[in-house]
Length: 308
Image (cartoon, rainbow, N blue to C red; front, side, top):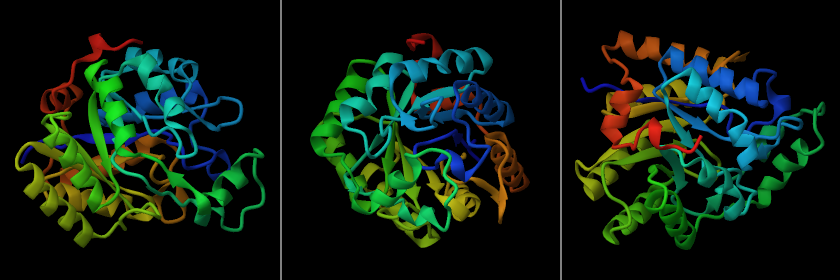
């Protein structure tokens, strides 16, 4: 079997600090969780930044630079920075940190969509910070803007000008056709790394038949010139990762996508999720790619070419 790239999404911009005491929000926590996940077997670290005092999502260069050098010094994992930032941020704000850091990889969302988080409100009333409840509540009127102009801008600023390769985040079928459109225009080249994002309200549901259809469509559009990975938000995280591996794909876990390690039990670290999935994959005969093997598979520029 081909080796599997395991990505770990460390903190994200969806979950709020009140949801879990284990969600990393300070630079020290994000660095420690990242190095721990890499030690456990993650080849790629997908990273967002947060304000250390409030835990609020941030894409400011200083918030990224507060932990990126520590992570680079502590492990050899590929650092993949989000250009999605938070769905409530304008594009220029979302890409400020990645532009300054010039990472090996960055994510790129392939279409505008509804991005509804308000079901996470539940019955909670004990919010740590005053921004959390309205951030979730107001997502019933939230449009995550990623127009063709936005996409082309990120491809130029992060790819052509800074040499990053992309994790193309596809939340639905139409996003694959948008990616093919930019391929046909010559603005992206293989090997493409597609991340199927499943289970976000506003995108495709995390169900095996949907993943099969996404893969079949990508096969038709991109032939052998792409690799795919799958993330599933919430409780389908581990099951859908195993389906992805069975289809020849790669996998992603992390507290950005799911705060739990099992039903009703909060994960105490990102490394805990990496270790659990790694064990499941190895029992099925799979082996994980090292960071350098992932770099070779994805055609990355290497750690020496980043700006942190």
